[in-house]
View 1 (cartoon, rainbow, N blue to C red):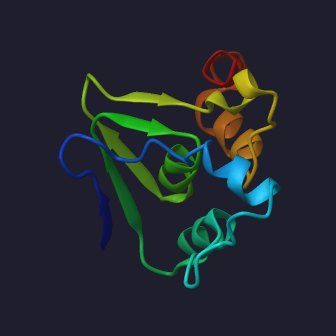
View 2: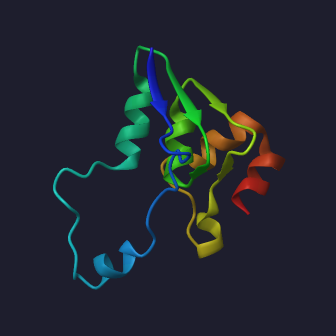
Length: 114
C-alpha cells in the first residue's frame, strides 16, 4: 500500500499564491520538472494500489486535493482541511469542487470552501 504522509506536522498548505505575481508579470517561468497537481491527483486516483493520506496540520488547496484523490484519509484531531481559494476569488481546481462534496456532503463542502 502506498502512503502519502505528513512531515513535521504539515501535510500540505497548497499553492504559494505569491508565485502568481511573478508568473503573470513574466518574471518567472515554471521550474523544469514541476508536475501539475491535476496530473498527480489523476494518477493517484487511477492507481491500482490503494493509497492512504495521513494528515497532520494543514491540508489546504492542492494539498487537500491530493488527500482527496487517495482511497482513504486519516487525520489527527488538530488537522485543518479546506479549499480556501474562493477567499481569493479563485474557484478550486483539479477536481476539488467535485471530490469534496462526494466525500463530506454538499453543506460541509460549502463550509470548507467558503
